[in-house]
Length: 556
Image 1 (cartoon, rainbow, N blue to C red):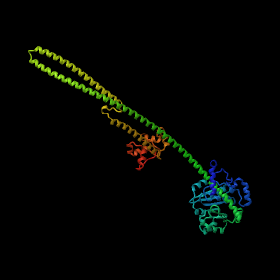
Image 2 (cartoon, one colour; image 1 turned 180 degrees about the vertical axis):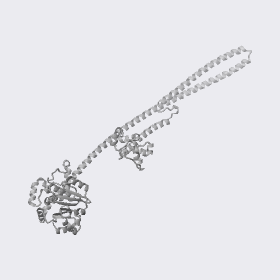
Image 3 (cartoon, rainbow, N blue to C red; image 1 turned 45 degrees about the vertical axis):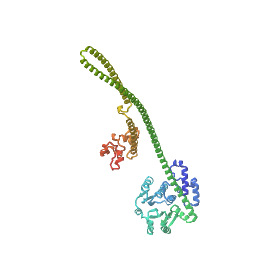
Image 4 (tube, helix red, strand yellow; image 1 turned 120 degrees about the vertical axis):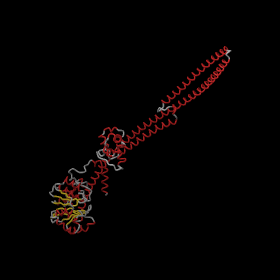
């Protein structure tokens, strides 16, 4: 754990240089792993040959081509060395899990240009697609894979043809002593058996039994690996390894060498996996940057729209203030006109009183004339006197009539002036009104109602705008709306103030446009006549109501 933490810290410190390094070397498997051996390979191999000539080989320092998370990564250097020493003709590997051990053996056969064949079967826990793909791309000339279970797979090799058999500790061949005895039916005279996970407590008795029967070599690095020599012919270098491992110092040396090489393989996998994670994180960061740019753009558009709305609001307020000022001026003018009308009414009453007095005088004069006429009839004898008096009275009546006519003319003029003034006031008041209502019917409550109606209309318009935005967001967030596709199909949508979604919400019903290839607007309207009859946008109806009502939709 300490080694992994130290390596992780090194990766984070030098992430820039790591990202510009290939995760797989190009034909540099001969390059030494990132160990202390890395600086001077030839000197290290010389020291290794001096201390352990039986196991010294450059193949142990190959970089593995195929690495995955596995507890068998530490055994890869030993696989390379064993294939070089054993030179197997037939290798069998049932129950492949991650493919680490299988492809390490394939790499060694390929690099050493040997003529051996290797057969494998992936068990229930193996990733068959990934393993088959990698095998087909790299080793299909000499490697063959199958999906058969272990029992069916091993039936094909019961003729003592296997030179190297790789088993896991849960193999059916290790399930009982009778199965262990049957191992000889599969193995050739050079037969070697490798058993993974030999350190597990559950297989301790079986492993002990195997050690008592056959020549073996075992080390406890990782989860343990046990090598059994079942054949009569043991290669000299392999025999030397087993002999040297029987001494405590030799065993420690061998264990130390393969442990360090195995840890290097684990570090190689760890570095590769961390590089992939860093690459993925950087790709995610780029996606997030694009999203942030889009969010900033939307924010700017929102602020721009808010400024427009604020400008419109200020204009509306200015219009309201101007209307209020005009209303106040009209109100003052009405008050002045009312005062003038009242003055004319008072003057008219005075003229009417004067006219009534003159009428009374005329009536009185007529009575007098009538009396005089009666007297004239009665005084026929005094006709001359009566005639003279009548003449005088007639002249007086004529003067009074002229005076009365003059009064009538003055009254008509005043009445006409009063009528013209009222018409002028009505005309002036009508010009400043928002609607042609007569001044006589106009009052304070009517003007107030008009102002209220105008503000209510403005308020309703703003509510409609907010609701339209919400409806646009509902369509824009739907998986059935493809903004890019819609903009390509209907270029005018780019010029809409609310984007492609706003264009579809406003024009979708009228133009029968489709929001994406997933939703056919015309089909939905034809199928749902109630939606068609109210002229509602089809996708909006489906998202708002149709989905809850289990209504169907169709692709374009």
